[in-house]
Image (cartoon, rainbow, N blue to C red; front, side):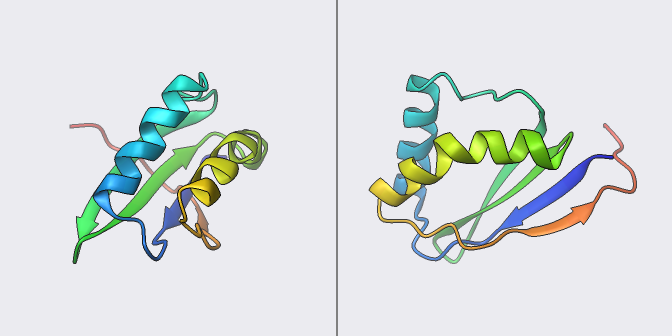
Length: 91
């Protein structure tokens, strides 16, 4: 079952988000296995992220690369809100 992961980390500015994406791409994790969708939105000058993953295991494997990058950039990702995906409609 697919899982929705919602993050609203403190101090995740657009600049830090862009740097995170750049470093993930450099690490070969820009399009990680198991991630079905990625959406980043800006609210009040901070980035919030909603991803859809095929499994908890895929998400955890990606976290092994993501968390050290975010920590190095001074961002505490916090704990995501995790929910089973009921439906996805494209278009």
